[in-house]
Image (tube, rainbow, N blue to C red; front, side, top):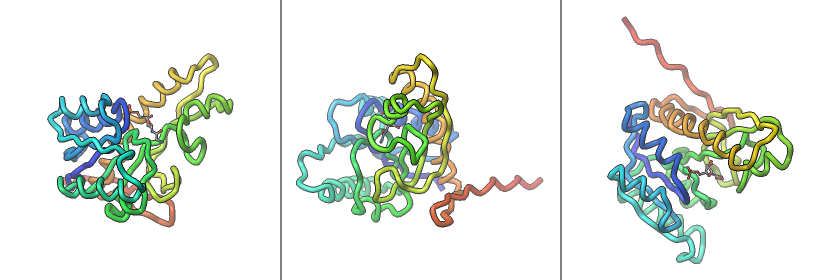
Length: 208
Ligand code: GAR
């Protein structure tokens, strides 16, 4: 099933770009219907505009509660017939108002191997903790912070002379590979939940 994606962003949008590129080169069976940012002027909006994708800016500061903010996001996504939501560097905690509207269809990419280093600045957390391996995680979003069922992970080494920026860049390479891949598994209907374990069904062999 071709996914009708809503992509929520707050920053540079390199993960959004990976999704747009994967749609364009047909490795991801999806179309991005709306890119929504909670911050004006971020580069992600420019990337969306260049790709001819509709954008919206909705500042969380204009809403008195997280739920009211999420209700407006849901309204905007539904107006574009979105069926799947990707959080691609969206730096806000989402509430059941959004999660219930898109049950089991909200996916996040996090720049660490969950359950390690949740929340903001995960690459700095990993470096300062002294981890030798970190990475990224693509997961279904639940009401906790970075606690939802894990779809895919990729490991990235922490090097001796790493800076946060160098590590961030190395992790991003894997994020850009993993997020479109996980979305494609969803598009192919290959993901199922077994408790909190996500099963990825193998592709059926083509019949000859
Ligand atoms: C990415 O590293 C993403 O994993 C992270 O923000 C960055 C956004 O980069 N997300 C979080 O930390 C969420 N907790 P991008 O705007 O270039 O895609």
